[in-house]
Length: 355
Image (tube, rainbow, N blue to C red):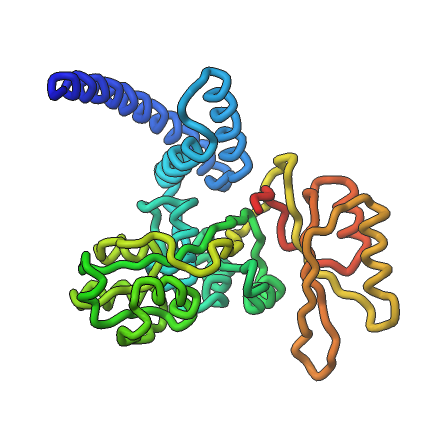
């Protein structure tokens, strides 16, 4: 058996050598692409192009009877793309911090572990960083499937001159991390109160409801405190446990396993059409009976499928509202361009539909 293992490992080493040669060859070409892009200041992040590559490779793998499916190929190549982007042009990514939050996890899923990250204390600060050119990309949450929309994100989209260039839908899983292998030895549990309340079934099942609960300002802070307290456990994100080197005992402990958050990536450019696009706008209507109905009717006439409509207050001395709207299509589509040009709308971006 040992002899067979050695033979297989030797074969793997040989394949790894070939993979490394090919990756180096790919990155040499990537650097040339970066030089061309830098002459015209073209964006290095092209989500529609990346999706196209992953789809093509997945179809090729299936056709050739390969073991790797779409998810495995996506995981491998998203990291390759992230490294490629840093070689083309190393740009700063702002996100809702601190480090170790779910927004950080969403950002890293697209820009990789080696990107230059700028954690900020609130969502509006991320928008300011993009508007002031302090960062090229920003990552913020926009809605959760159980909690609804993030109002400050919608308000900031209206306030700042930025564009949505991509979206990320991510399953939000609370994890349990601790240095203690035996849960009976845990004396304290650190967690953000919301995270704690979303994991009550797990805590009850494992006899942890009576353990002292110490609330923290974030799940990332919970992991940091557990790293300094060996008799404790933390309810935190997977990335936070990794950052603070706290062993992960349970990966998914939340009561609602269908908890998903939609994040958006903001920047200062227009993305190209992919054929499967979403457009976001802010629309204003006159304050009279039937105004919203008339607006929605025009979407029907243009055969545009609405995906979301959310009202927000004007925040002045009136009770007037404006509407955040998501719909299928790209601003370069004729029917989309016509409805945006003909109505009182602020275009927020057209981007690959990923949620």
